[in-house]
Length: 487
Ligand code: ADP
Image (tube, rainbow, N blue to C red; front, side, top):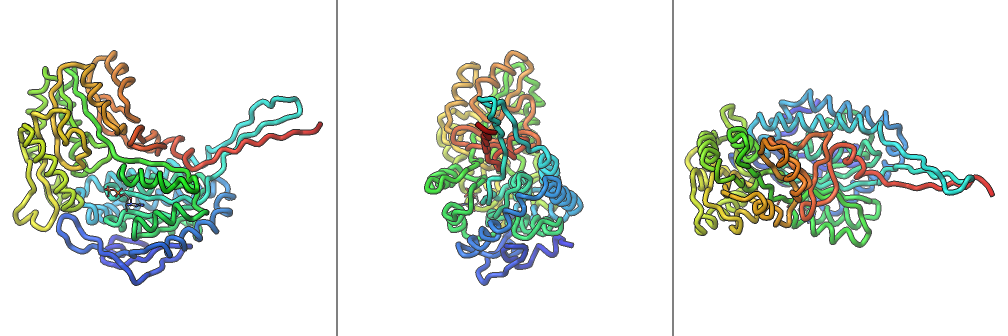
């Protein structure tokens, strides 16, 4: 039975063809709140990645040929095992990623839900029969698994991103090689141990931790890999698009964002401020669909900022395993530096720090990468902080007057992942949601990722969707079969 103790403070190899293979080259995994060692994983490269792809390739015909029910059973058991180990897995998530344990538990529950949902969806993949163009002709449309998939996941949701990709892939009949982020590979190791226990056949799911660029190159150059699904930065996403051209690999990309929150004058201001905080400070602001900038109408700006500042000031920052903690550290010092650079730039350009605006120091924070929860006012849309993804616990507030102008401003970004709107006017709900150039719009709420809904962006935020029946389509090819019955 895997447990947190089996995962933490051990050295883990790569997982290929149902076996864990230790390799000499390893990397330490550290707790971003303390800098302490929490585990060690393989630092693999091209050879190991190719070994894993070969294993996935050999396992593919049998896995694809299994009944949907057989595949569903593995996913169902996986979901149950994740739920049964929720506390242990959440502890691993917190220790390697930093988020408060309560958030890690939510993430793990969400991770189990993706596995469960796609266990059900596996059984609903079907084809079509459409009328032929001649009396003796039949037209059949089949859906078939794409083949071997390379899956690349980020560090911010190290458990749920893994099941969000693996579950639809396995449900569809694909076999996979996962490359998790090197900062947070232990959650993936834990999930793979559970998947193994769930009865996943050898070679169907393989795990390679190591050099990102090398493993990514193997995914793109190995002819057996037919699809790559990636969640991460727009920069790496663009690189993968270029690399995918040679063999025309199918891609799903969930990239960066610049999500606006727009609070209209008719909004429930308290609900808007509370929703803003729940989203902005979740995971210390390290969420791709996290609110980047808050646009608040001048008529409600004062009460909104007051409530926001009051509640943000009260946020308790500390180690994620401490029961009082509401916000943990950022993933590393580079992330702190990035957030602070944007804050300093805004202040130089005339922004006012209402609360926060600095790195946290002192005994509790000394060895970790902590940044104070921050609220900035006096922000204008041309400032760097309004243009770039902050990915940290900083809430910049822009005060606006005109609906049309604010919509033009928020649409004038190369990104298009998520947008959040608070209004009680039903006309506005529809007109604004229709005009926002984003893949997802939340009205009077700030939570979006659920297994049954299509999560994803437009423009430079990526392509493809995760969740819902759309999510499984990403792992299926359409085959059109025309049968002529006779002369
Ligand atoms: P972030 O800046 O949030 O860390 P990245 O895009 O760098 O985002 O990382 C997301 C995932 O992509 C991680 O698993 C990372 O290891 C991986 N990655 C980074 N560079 C490459 C690359 N050149 N090829 C393939 N994967 C990469």
